[in-house]
Length: 74
Image 1: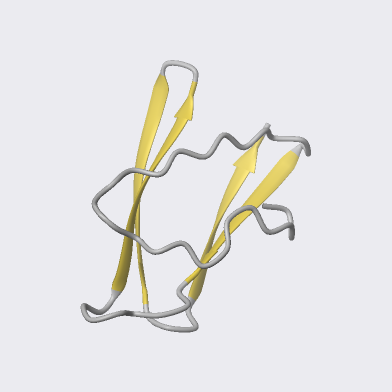
Image 2: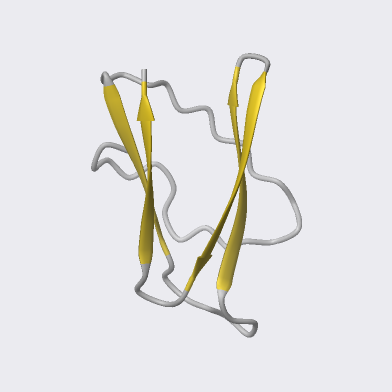
C-alpha cells in the first residue's frame, strides 16, 4: 500500500484473510504481485473491498511476476 509492504508471501487458500488498511493519502495505491503460481496456475485472489456499508468485489488473476494495482481515492 503506497509502496509499503503490508503482507509478504501470503499463500492463497480457502480460508479468508482480513486486512484493515487505513487510507492515509488522498489517493492510495494497493499493489498485488504474483510471486508463485503453485500447482494450479494462475494465482487467483478474490478481494472484497469494504467502505462502510458499500462492498466492492474484485478478482486478481496473476502469473508469476505479474502485478496489478488498485487505486483508491479518499
